[in-house]
Length: 300
Ligand SMILES: C[S@@+](CC[C@H](N)C(=O)[O-])C[C@H]1O[C@@H](n2cnc3c(N)ncnc32)[C@H](O)[C@@H]1O
Image (tube, rainbow, N blue to C red; front, side):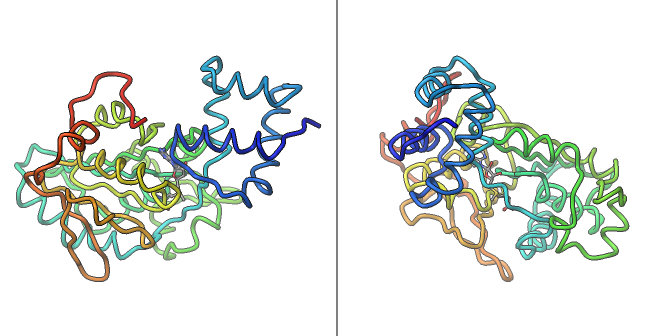
């Protein structure tokens, strides 16, 4: 068995934090993650930690790097999670967007991060259930996540009972087919959404996704430290259409230092709406948050 010391675990933790933002505390690092990292090293046939570390950090194996990310992420999610936000989406936000847009413009919704896809399919189900998906209005619903295994599962659209715990019976019958030990989303639902592996810290890739009317970013920023959290929120602002909406998770709040959004209380949820004109920012803020980007630019 390969031995990995606490100092070596910390090296991996710091590298992962730098690349994808997630911070892992000492306790989790030495319990859950030690096992996962040792397993990864051994699965790839490395005889010692340092060879593994230099390979994964030296850009010599993108596949190994992706596997490291997949190992370090926390993918907990389920259908209809924090569902008040979806109710506000279909009751208040979509009708407002619909009335402002011409008939050939689409309404674009981003789930960042989407994990294994439950959030993305929930959005599509809400839109369909409220009769909003019809020939007169196109939707683009995209889910992104840095974990390629999670994105693959999202694309497959097959779920176990654990993910389905909040789904009402009639929705299960209408949008899923029971198969073996789980549920397969029906083709119409699968075709209504798309998924992509993207790191939210990669500002260039983020801006290549296009512009969105609504972004859901729930239960990821809590794993980021303050600087990366702020910068990621600024990236979201830069890919939102003017006066677009941002939903955060229930345990997440807009940092008071970010002045790009106004807080709006809608029903039981809080939603952040981007200002039409970004308030004046300092040259440093412009440099970090809003400057046009070239390929290879990240938050780092
Ligand atoms: C707890 S899940 C949240 C999923 C869903 N939004 C929800 O609230 O149920 C957190 C997800 O964030 C993803 N994640 C972490 N860092 C990321 C990054 N830098 N870019 C994109 N996704 C990231 C993880 O892979 C994980 O799937």
